[in-house]
Image (cartoon, rainbow, N blue to C red):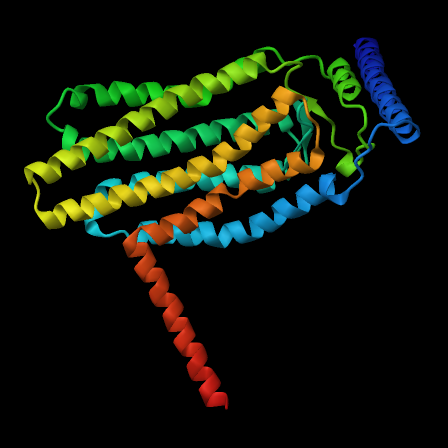
Length: 363
C-alpha cells in the first residue's frame, strides 16, 4: 500500500514539475519576445510610447480616483430614489433603483474590480484591478452594460404600459417580451468564450502585431487575449445592441406620440398631463446622457479597430470616459427630476446658511 502511495506521489510530483516548467518556458519565451521587440523599437524608427498617460499606472490611478468620487455620489443617488421619490412616481421607483444599481455596478467593475488596460486595436489586454480574472471581468463589463440598457428599456416600457397600454394587445405580450430580454442579457457575450485562443501562442501573435510595447511589469499580471479577430465578439455585441436599442426607441416614440394625442384629446387634466410630460422629458434627458457617454467610447473603439490604430493614451481615456457614465447619469438624474433637485438644493442652501452663520459668529 505504501509503495502505491509513494509511486502516486512521485507521479504527481513529476506532472506538477512538468507543468511548472512548461509554463516557465512559455513565460520566458514571451518575455524574450517582448524585450527583443522593445530593443528593436529603441534602435529603429518605430515610436515607443513611454508617456505616463499611456502607462498602466496612470489608468489605475485615474480609475481609483473615479472610485473615490463614485461611491458617495452613487450612495446619494440611491438615497434620493429610495426616500425622496414622491408617491405619484411609485410605479417607476423600483425600476429607477434597478437602473441605478446596474449603472453603479458596471462603473464599479470598470473602475475598481477590473481596471481594464486594453491594447486596442488588438482584442487583448490586462486586468489591473482588485481581481485578476480578466476573462470573467470582460464578460461582466459587457453583461452589466447590457443589463443597464435593459433597465432603461424597462422604465420606458413601464411608462408606456402604465399610461397608455393597459387596454391594448401589449398587456398580453409584455411578460413574454421581458422573459426574452432577461434571458438575452446574460448570454449576449457568451459566444466569444467558445472560441478563446490558446493563450501562449495568442500572446505572441498580439505582441508581433503591436510590437512597440514597453515590458509590462504591473503587479505581474498576464495578458489575456479574448480572440484573434473581432468577428464573433462584434457580432455578439451588435446583435444585443440592435435588439435593445430598437426596443428602447420604439417605446420612446410610442410615449411621445401618445402624449401628443392625450394633449389634443384632453383625456387627462392639464396638471396630470404636465406631470407626465415633465417626467418623460427628464427620463429622455437622463437616458440620452447615459447613451452618449457609453456610445462615444464604443464609436471610438470601432474607429480604432477599423483603422488598426494603436494609441495607448487614447485607449486609456476611452475606458476612463466609460467609467464616468454612472457618476454623470446620477448627477443628471438629480438635476432633471424635480423632487431630487429640490431636496439637493435645499440641503446645499442650508449648508451655505450654516457656513455664513458660523463666519459671522467667528468675526
